[in-house]
Length: 282
Image 1 (cartoon, rainbow, N blue to C red):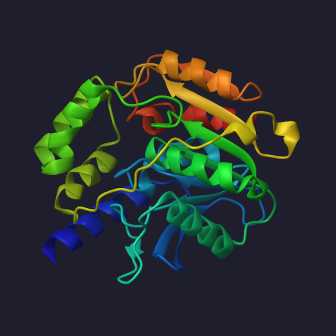
Image 2 (image 1 turned 120 degrees about the vertical axis):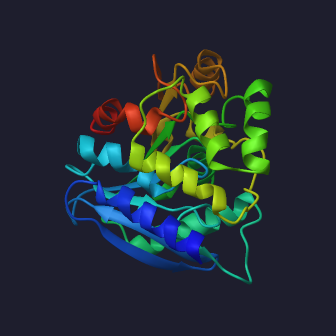
């Protein structure tokens, strides 16, 4: 109970740093209750944000501060089964890609967005977003993938080896050390970093993994699918960003694919927020 209350207090402190009013809502889905933190004009075009694994929806605070909610109604989602305030259903766990797509369908239904949805995800959240777009292209107006993992290329073995101790037995020290290594010592939001340390006490849940999404149907936006933007972190240790970008351009010739130099994978939503928001506004 003490760990849960400490996590909640740290989560609330990170969310309190967001500018302007934030409306938090718990959406019922067949897979559990999903926490969504919303801000921006109620009638503005919807922007649904999926965080990386373990990052929680609070990771998008820098993007909100940079103006993501000026022209959009932002819906920042806590992944069900991941650290955050979403609560998995006791009798129906998410076990497959199909379950993830069904869960996100239910979230979008619950949000009742006005107009075409822009779905943006970072890292593991981008993998989920890509699978959803591949199977439900008619639900989206735009897909934005921010340093997506396991979408265009695999993970580097060295990154996996460094991450394994954190995944197997997370401690605040291991989490800090891993993030400092991957981001090359980038200055991360201290409130978000404290929340990451709190995640060490969060119940471990094995994330759903699976094949790369089949994005062939999204190769040309004129075919009726969403417009696709892909932004890779130039300093990412999880994969070779240049190789991943080449693979993305080959697979999605109609997409806007870029590599942002000087930014690491885990730091991307925190330290490159202005660039992300600029691209969202295009």
